[in-house]
Length: 233
Image (cartoon, rainbow, N blue to C red; front, side, top):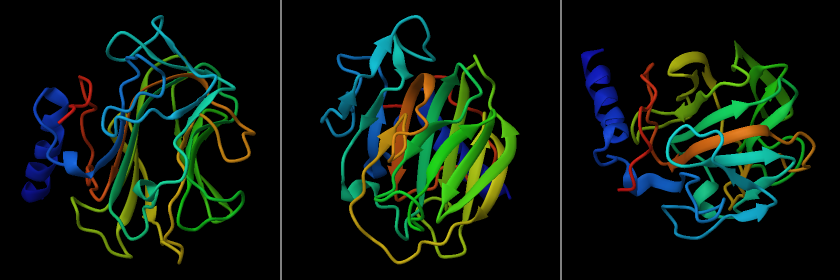
């Protein structure tokens, strides 16, 4: 247990202004500070923007956040977003303004079942995920009108196997864990923020500080949410 705690503290130091120990595994980092809504600090390549905008009225860190209401960002197919047999971590600060069904992120290739990917979404205020034609609620609600830190983490550090746990956190508290099998498909994948593949349940509200890490599970245990923007190195 002490080893896990020490590992956990190492992971969290990056949020206090120091360097990120897993920077080389980060495949997307969006602060939503401009100049464009889809500016990616890691790749340097803007995400495709479908009418998303920045707002200064609400933000978790920095001067602005991503404002969504039927709009979204789309990275397009990339090997960076294939999580097949990988440890990984998805992180978001989200501020929904309604409890209606809405998608935070989706990296499926096709609608319906896709056992190698999943959709992270909110339904009736509950944090939920969908994979391989199975919908699962984590049993905990996000707070409407407030900033919530959402994290999904698989594996411990760079270690992962078929029995590795997939853990879901709201504000650093683990709310669900399960085994996520990989299926058989390893292929370049899209990544959408604010909508799903059929664009049927758009996110309504604001999103800030999105970090996608492929190859490292940052959170094997509960943690204190970051108190500063994610580092850029």
